[in-house]
Length: 122
Image (cartoon, rainbow, N blue to C red; front, side):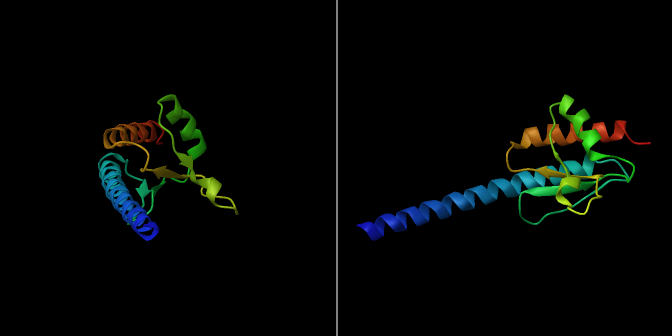
């Protein structure tokens, strides 16, 4: 009986993990398609194969922390990338997570982010 219960738990966990991966894959695809369509020229982004994050590189003169404050006013959040580089620099990068929001919110958020970037281009 105990072995059967462990097997049931393993199968349940595997099924959950597979459903979660399919959901993350769909959300990643939506985010990347929206970035492809909306991100202004002069900016680039990563095309992750797995994981939960995409990175955006802004023009050198843009500061992601300043952009973050403007985006928060529009209820759009991201993590400035400079925090991930212990030797400094990379203040023009940001990390986006696509695992926590439904697809329609991802499209709305990325569209608002890209509009804010456009408003701050030189």
